[in-house]
Image 1 (cartoon, helix red, strand yellow):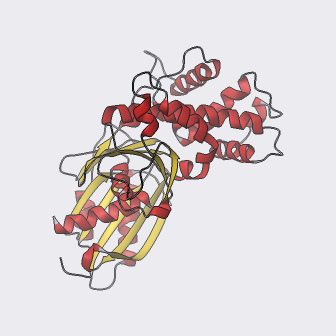
Image 2: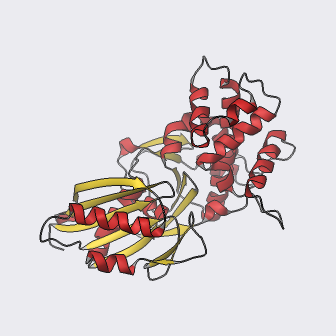
Image 3: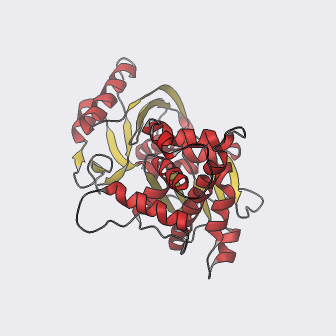
Length: 350
């Protein structure tokens, strides 16, 4: 591969689109030429943003040699169409027209957390912090691992070998709850009622319990329980929905807040659910390590660490394995975007 090739990388989530144009040099290193972001929308709006970003930042008389777009949802085998979960998980949308319009030599779609798993392999030591488990001295193996990324949804990526990363919709697996736990039962009821509609009751999934909006749901359940709080349920419901989870985090961190006890109870419940979800994924994959990523985990992992650890390691058969298994937090906001950039570069040399 010769130097000075151009790649386009996109990380499209349910809330935000991020794009990067990078110049690739020898040794597969890259230099960022431009980055941008926008709010997520329809498929047409996503394509329009990507096209405008590329046309605005592409140097004169240049072309994009490879483009990788990471999207939340299932991607087709030819990597040219995908069913975006936050729009319609059953409706495939093609992106061949976008790649053709951009004149891209090689274009492909990836699951967004599939990109994130590639990004894990690029983390510097300073971008990783231990959550629980035992990490041996020396470099951490990143051949077989599982990545969980709570966000607007709950994304899961799995690495099965050195150069093999597979997408997953593991965040939609049915969730389990502790028996005889009144608070967890209330959270499950609220999650189920959020679906609405008629017919057979849906199974509550881990995405219903550990995504960003779920923290507000858990806090509501706390307020409806016996935990003391100066904040009434009516006052909490008056908070703008998109700010509710942020307000819970703020209360948990403020020793002067009269709602701190309730907020910390919510985080303990959240940590139990997240630990249980990652334990299930670890039992399926038997990884060498478990990673957690995304802004929610980065900003709040100290608040749920203890509850996560207790829940993650609580297994009647494999508790010793889980107690040793290193669980690490990725401190890189560009995890998915870096992985998409790496995938685009890899497409040029494959």
